[in-house]
Amino acid sequence: MRGNLPVPSHRLSDLVLSIADNKQMLGLRYAEWATRAPSLEADIAAAAMGLDDLGHSRVLYGCLEPLGADPRGLERESDPASLRALPYFDEPWTEWAQFVAANAVLDTAFTVMIEACVNGEVEVLQHRLRKMLLEERYHFLHGRSWLKSRIDAEPLNRAWTEAIEWFGPPDGEVAKLHRDGKLSMGPRELLARLEERLESKSPNARVDWKGWDPVRRRSRPGAIDEQTFGMLRGLEEKKFAATKEG
Amino acid sequence: MTTHYKRVSGDAVEYEVFARKTRAEPLHQVGSVVAPDDDLAMAYARATYDEERWCEMAIVRKEHVIELWQPGEV
Image 1 (spheres, each protein chain N blue to C red):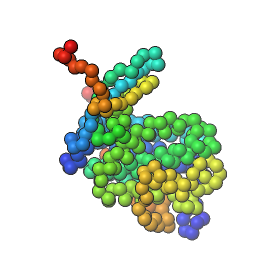
Image 2: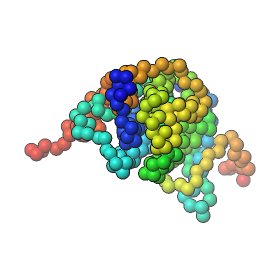
Image 3: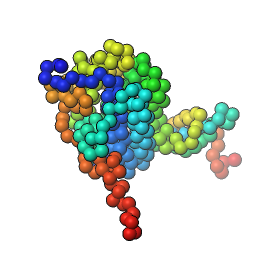
Image 4: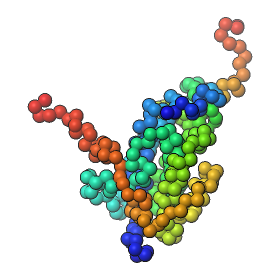
């Protein structure tokens, strides 16, 4: 127990599920901009990056069983708050600046964590996640370039804050996994690596770890919107299913 | 909503995209992209022309191509 917080799980599979859920939502939100970006090239890039991240999430879900403990329960079928995505993905983005901030900061934060997995001591992650780093190079170039267009500060600060929260507290499970050799970086190193890649310092975000949820790796309550959850569960598709009479 | 982002119409640069599927064949032009810098041009080229299994892809700023002659000049 750390103060009044629940005991966090030190299972690597919990972290991998968090990466998978976040990449799934990132991919979906990217794809929503495939016809709304500022140029045709950016439309195509949004679609391509969306497909990449949805594919990455599939690979990550496939790692859960080999890791020995699949944390996914039945509640994921009915409760959107059981998914482990960040608040940034709860609602569809309405501004291009939100896309750019997610692309530059959050996508890179997930990549930095994947680097820590690939360079850690867990064989299944070393082998299966390496290819993602090659594909993520182009997401990074896209985000870094668009960041130069000086987007609004609000989504950028929010993305930085959620990235810091997602890396976790200095004495949390990511730090423990780092000490155990399963990850090559802990929260401090992950943030330093993110700042190095983006060539900028993170805003002075004060995270209240007392209110932080160690399973969902976020402080804010909430969940993804109903329509997106329905689509993920196949409920939207059922509306179009042929009836017996038809 | 997005009209103030002059990432293509402002300082846009045209890039030619080259690729090949095997080491045995030469690079050939597969298309072009428009972007304000090399980073975005690389991202756009990869996203736009990635449907084939290329073993190599490269981009060149169109302004860096030195033309010896053009159609109708020979």
